[in-house]
Amino acid sequence: MVLLKEKLSADFSPPLSIAQEVSRHLEKKIILNELKPGTRLIERNLSESLGVSRISIREAFRMLESAGLVKIIPRKGAQVTAITKREIEEIYSLRANLVGLAAKLAAQNIKKEDLASLIRIAKQMAEKARKNDLNGYFPLNLKFHRLLSQAGGNQRLHKILENFGKQTHRFRYASMSLPGRIQKSNAYHQQLIAVLKEGNGKKAEKIARTIIEEAGQALMEHPFEDSTEFPGLFKKPNPEEV
Image (cartoon, rainbow, N blue to C red; front, side, top):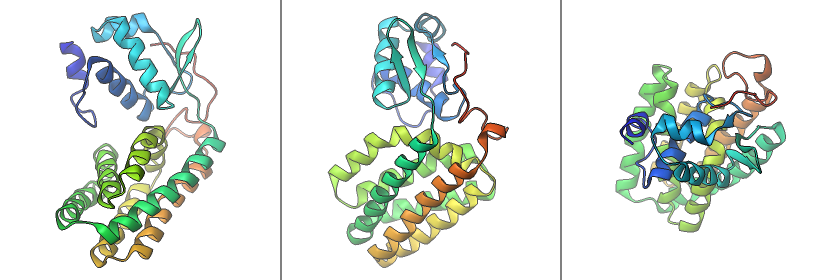
């Protein structure tokens, strides 16, 4: 268990249970493409390497399956799900509408303390973008959008985006890995802060939608199958096992 906690020290949020710790540990590896599409996750191996029970590993697999990150195949175990361009199109189209609405509501309803928090996060994002620090920028981006969806006051929309979020994280990380994408993302987020200050819901919705749509388009157009920048994104299943 100590070994697992050490491995999870840089994860996105604190664990709530052993199974959830395992789930978040594997989730992060999938998002960062350390576990590529098609990789088999071997229950016995993970139990031994992480120092947790196989029951916890199986529960973690179910969590990852519900998030769309792994597929549990009868008599074969768990496998990291493949990514298709159609899936990218569907997810980014849906997310553009949801995040656009969240930004509009935030501009209309945001509290001073939430706006101050978004401004602080945006400043940190700008610094990471200046350094081209993807691994520093990415969790700040997640934090920004989590708070943005909360700030609008529509709890159902926030829960939808939270539940939907895990399916999008590895796509968002891949998109931000492209040349110039961190800087472009940051520029739009700074614009978004400006219109949130103005309380302009229409402009906030337009900027938020543009952020998502352009990120999705960049991801669709980039030939990852021939790239070393984010290898394996659209490739056939990898026979590797962990």
